[in-house]
Amino acid sequence: MGIGSSMMAGIGLGDPVIRLGVTGLSRAGKTVFITSLVANLMDRGRMHALRAAADGSIKAAWLQPQPDDTIPRFDFERHLAALTGPAPQWPEGTRHVSQLRLSLRLDPKGLLGGLTGPRTVHLDIVDYPGEWLLDLRLMEKDFSEWSAEVLDRMAGRPGADDYQTALNGLNPDRFDEPTAQSLARTYTAHLHAAREAGWSDCTPGRFLIPGEMEGSPALTFAPLPASFAAGRLHKEFRRRFDAYKSRVVKPFFRNHFARIDRQVVLVDVLGAIHQGPRAVEDMRRAMADVLTAFRPGRAGWLAQLLGTRRVERILFAATKADHLHHIQHNRLTAILSAMLREARDRADFSGARTEAMSIAALRATTEDTIRQDGQELPAVRGRLLDGRQAAFYPGELPADPAALLHPARDGAPAWLDGDYAIMNFAPAPMTARSGDGPPHIRLDRAAEFLIGDRL
Figure 1: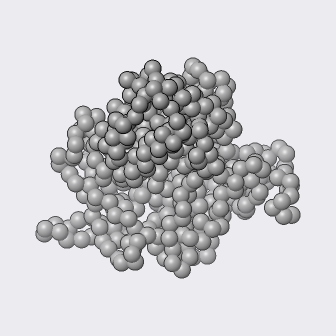
Figure 2 (figure 1 turned 120 degrees about the horizontal axis):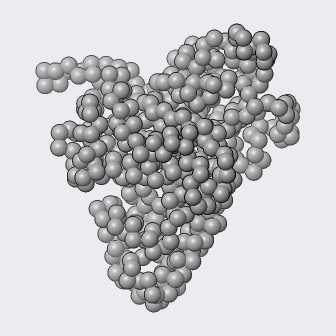
Figure 3 (figure 1 turned 90 degrees about the vertical axis):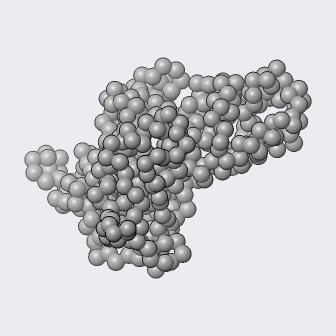
């Protein structure tokens, strides 16, 4: 039966469905995570920690048409070809909401198998940009509050001076469309530059990934100082800010977010550490704020939207663990746990089970030892983006996460006791055995936590 057939074709009406949301901020690896997860659920030779795969309960896995006819399909085949082809490369990142349905045929072992018999479980994976999730915090702010916060934290970020210069030349009592568009472009350029430099809190999220709304009035505003509050420009930008919340942010949460059962939040902790203390604190605050979405019963519009529904399990995953020797993985996990302590406590309080771990959805390196200044250092070796091979030691992460988080909270301009480097590796050529999915680090453990109880 073709892709254009009814979405229910071949699907039992009573088959259980797990809706798994996958999000994270830019370059956290959402596309690679989904591609490798699906590939490894279809070819399960590397999924030893997923009990249903290890004991043979999963008999088959196949792709189905996604259940929502108006949402683009996650382009699994193209992304997998990019990662596993003769000249592997990283696929393009998430630009919009997409979806994929993977169906698992199960024949459970033991007592459960005798009670239930063979059955099918559908895994609906919903991919959405983390930049859009950041917009949650806008819903409970007015334009003046948002402007004050943005302008306060903008200092020192790339493009901030250009935006301030643009503001200095404006007449607050005058509004015209070319001026609005010019100011919005300058602010958007600042957001792109800040994101490239490792900052996490860059709102509004749709300014970075506008899609079909690019150039619309709802995406043509920018923060204004309090001195502009009585002018026409402020009045019109306030109206557009409110339209952005009602026409863009609220429908996203109503149509997609409110239907999720399990959630993965991918975090590029190593990238933030490399950028310095301010980037780490910015990431910590951003994630703590947006993850209030996982608190059922929260007062206001979100509680009304979600009702009694709750996300049952949330995985916080520090990606790119293959950039570190395995002896540092526990330290990376500890840093992530400490960064997200506030957010995790909120989710735990609501009854959701949470877990933090360090993963690499696609392992691009092998471990090595290099000599430097008479010392042997635990390193990783891989292929760089230009094709050269390189061994790399990023520096030693601290055993106590407070050594990073305290200077980050205090606004330190740089790390005092360490220089944490990163290197951009390309995917390694694949040498998988038949029945093996792409190589990874702890992707099987992530899958066991997220869906193992339902298989």
